[in-house]
Length: 287
Image (cartoon, rainbow, N blue to C red):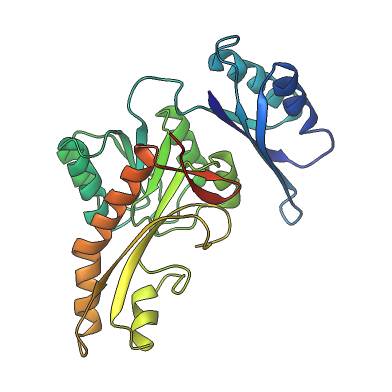
């Protein structure tokens, strides 16, 4: 069974050794190890992707062992295996203002096109609370009066609801590096309202418009700490406009219809196990 272990905490010596030693001596095949030392934050982050012999030791026991190592070393350790449970994957849908992307996900789940469980909706604004109530989903606002999110509370909610995937459905805040590594390995999926890598940042419609583009689009990608990096693309789609189309109309077309459909398709590819993230690159899953 494929298992992803992440460990994040204050940087000091000897953090990786006990984790690697335990999984290696238990008979796991180690497919990927990534370690990061963020000097400016004195933050250590590590990801290990393994093939775990779950017929000899259940993933739940591995999790207990890793949690104990984390306690001894001062690390936040998480053990995640997509196939540990027979249930559909659980989603945390994160929003700010626009409800359309989250609505597209919820409708696809309701209609059976997306085989997932919307475990929780989290926002840094209350704009989508009514949508959560409409579909009977718990909603948590982690933002203050200015929309600044409590990122630690956000991570606590991901754990509390035992989510498999975190979906940034037009969530208009940048996740800090710590959360990106705590839930690394292809668990965080973002809707970017522009075509990457050509139009990153917060104003991709405006940037494309100033370059007189007639083709616009959206990108669904896995999150890694580098903002809107270009090698984690799950799905892209485009739409064309006629010359002279006002920017306001282009944005309306993108936000109301195109972005939601793009997100729903990209998320389906992840949920259906068509793609995964290995070494920060999207790979097609061999069946």
